[in-house]
Length: 631
Ligand code: COA
Ligand code: AMP
Image 1: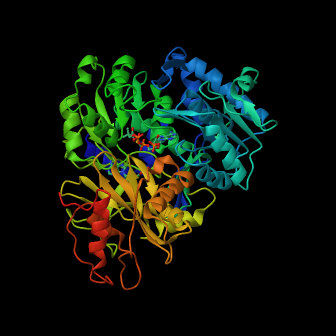
Image 2: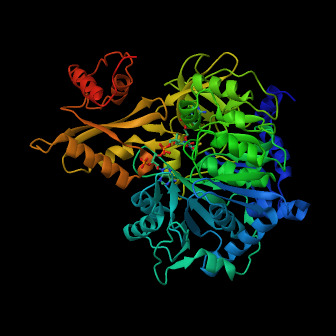
Image 3: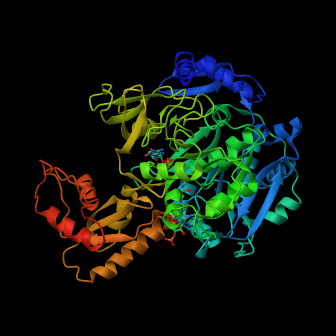
């Protein structure tokens, strides 16, 4: 079938389409209704169905004869080690870790926070939760203890699972003290923490509360898979909202398992038994979907890579992993390619490796600039597929479906809507935009299986944030356009979210931190264009009158404060003190205008600006830190 036929069928007969896709999953009890649309704007897929995600991702494959196949390869240049875990071994480890959780009192519906580096135990902990119907919430290791504390208070975990440390090329990240501080800060206290004590820094244990992973798993009683409702939550993943309070995106079991499995075949054109590699982190949605769940649900081998694209040890690292482990399809963020290109623009390292089994490169997480796309196509001589998605959807919204009908690539476009997603561009009045015109990108409800059914215990925020802009539509938060042929172009966010090295961050959250500094009267954070990371945050602060401490001291304090409160991942390193911020006459800070100035772009003087002269000062100040120069 052609792309058009598949896409049209997914919209004209969604229930038939997804019921057919659901045949690829083992159900303990079939669903009563494919799509429960009795309570709009809340929609539930496979209502009444019962299944277990871990069974589908692990046990089922062992029963079908894949026990000896490698399920997980841990490739860790930062510790100079590798480990391979077969499906049979994974079943044993996950079953026993589920036993550890059960012995600590975790039962169906309880939350477990996982705060781990890129080690197989992160996936084992996630799958063990799924096995017993507990809900995991993985927190990215680059977040601070305060961010972790916010998530503890929202998810209220009974148990936390953490690594004692993470290893960045330049330093050991002290996870254990961060975990302890977060628990001190949080109002909710977990009963226990299971700590994977890594030799690089085993960390200090808290007696009575902390449990050693190795000791506990050695004597644990393996647990079977429990049946859960398709609509029960599998996990919560927090993502940046427009304030400092992150949103707890909920993922269900049934729709997720179906969407993940369908995508492996139709989007990535994978075959069970092949090796799939998403070079991301388990703390991000890409890691949940395409390091852990989708490859395992589909019976592939997945790679957990603990390293960087460059510097561990060189810019050939990605090609080494692909060649050494026989990767068929790899997925990463454009920023990783830009990092490689910067060091090895002629791709000399690539020549050392056998890439014969490698078929395609998928990119997501941020806009892929045409230069990077062309460079990757030239050096790899393989399809390079940009695809667009977000934490909320959990899988591609727009892509070039390699397993259906590969379409011609248009640089700068993630191609067309994925089946199940009715993507429309609406203008400010809610009318569908003409082709080629920019508007808000919306998805007509219901969204396909796999997308968030709600925010964790916060239906109201779910409706307010996503469903109230236009009745009957999900607001993606991105602006863009469709061309005459239906190709989508994703241009920018319409909120204050920025994308730094493929990491999604809230400038509002950073502003809250800057504003908490005693010398700061007001502030703004903008995402300035960056050749490597896409965007980087730049702070502009106005000091309280009477503050006469040196600006560079305050700047350093502000940089340190954001690192402490949000974490190194915010990559907040640039800040300038200004006399005033440009505002409209009604007092709205003109962040968009400042961003254009920072990027050296022309801008129209906003008609409502209260004092145009301020913009010259802003430009001059930004130039002192390397921004605001016309190309
Ligand atoms: N735990 C603790 N700290 C972490 C971390 C983790 N898991 N991951 C990153 N950090 C820290 C880094 O050490 C760095 O700290 P520093 O300010 O002390 O140097 C900071 O967070 C920023 O990290 P990053 O944005 O990764 O920058 P980098 O300079 O270390 O690396 C790239 C640049 C391009 C190589 C890197 O960003 C990259 O590989 N990006 C791929 C993006 C990606 O996988 N995105 C996921 C969505 S698909
Ligand atoms: P996250 O939730 O962290 O995956 O970030 C999602 C956001 O990243 C989207 O809303 C977009 O703004 C951006 N994004 C992700 N993939 C792409 C892409 N292929 N092209 C343009 N922007 C993207």
